[in-house]
Image 1 (cartoon, rainbow, N blue to C red):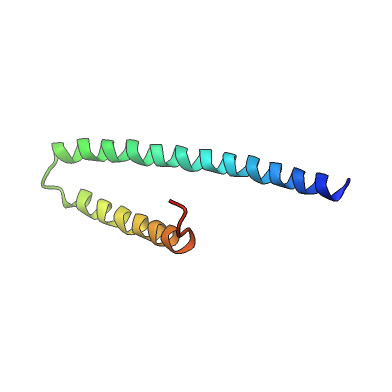
Image 2 (tube, rainbow, N blue to C red):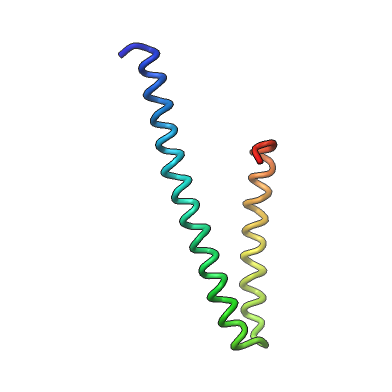
Length: 78
C-alpha cells in the first residue's frame, strides 16, 4: 500500500470512528435528558424529598467536571 493510500485510509478510519463515538455521545445525552424529565416528574409528586436535590447536586458536579475537561482541552472549538 502506498503511503498516500495509508494516510487516506487512516483518515477514513478516524472519521468513521469519530462519527460512531459522536453518535454514542449524542445517545447518552438524550438519555440524560430523558432521565432528568423523569426525575422532575417524580420530584413534583414528592416536593419535600431532599433526595432529588442530592441527586441533582451530584449530577451537576459530574457535568461541571466534563465541562472543565472540554474547556481545558477544546478551546476555540465552539
